[in-house]
Length: 448
Image (cartoon, rainbow, N blue to C red; front, side, top):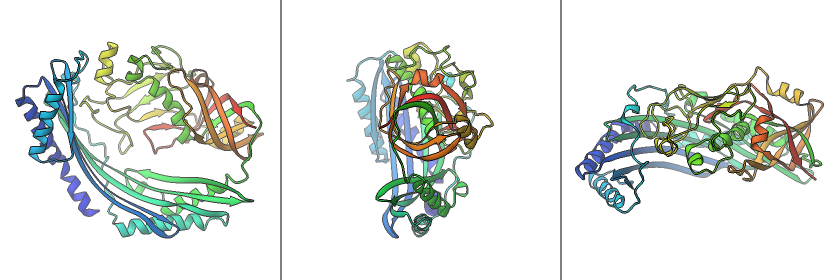
């Protein structure tokens, strides 16, 4: 991987030259505006199962995409061949395609005045000096630790160690060109446990931009095994209504449905359960949703969005009230608004919690359901109707009693968001949204 690190560290300058070449070619062909994105990714992934190497993969991918605008028409083309001839050919194709598309008065680059001018080092680039042999050894060690944790661990789906280093460059005919490199590393393990003829599966993973911040491979295996064993003896429960507690990695998805509903595309297409909801209290007063794009080393940190617009700190929800949508320049124009620097998505959403930890939330819940896995895609983001299969644990008198499976939780997100009564301090830092365990006062739980 030392070779990979060296090549990608040189990639920013190389990719910026490719972007400049494509933009110069587009200008020479008389386009009104153009934008170019170029990328390079190199990585290594090793999977071991039952002591054998099941998969070993090295990736080295490059690509460039160009969008041109001419007379309110848009054309796109891409290529994985980064030679000068291939780049010029891609630009020519994009220009020819622009002659065939419909006019769209809202298309075009983001405003020149919104381009990022301050280059920020967000500490996203931390290569892992690991070769195939070490990756394999870590994967085998991770799985062995899982298999040795409990005699009820009966099988394995394997352990995977992965590392990736990528470089991104973007430029447009406003004169903006920016680039950055980023890394991502992970260790994951999934195993099966069996008792009295019944089998359960679970997993655990660790991920970070920084290799030294990963959990120990053996610890990942042990946690995967412990979580799996804790699912043994799972029962069905009778249909009821009760409090529901989402663990952090699922709480962020639960809140994520709101973020999808306030995205510009959902708003201008009129296909959102939070349509025209700015100014409405969609959560209880204690809920805040903050966007912080410049957190060092964080998963979704960026100093410019995918249109070159400078990212900035902002509050999306304040005291439960929706203050703003999530907009690119195109969706903003469709809505008669300004871009929120979210072309390509939101960046580092923070949902501050209380000082309450998971154990205290379980105690406060009294009787209810802890949701540890969601099954199915039963979310209608147009109506807000929500119905998901659940695996988790049942709680009585503030203590976990037994594992639960084959149940469904249901409600409407508009109502469920208002029923949030607590958010814990146990934030999951592995994704682009940081949220602790989330307690909903009451949901319909369909069981036996």
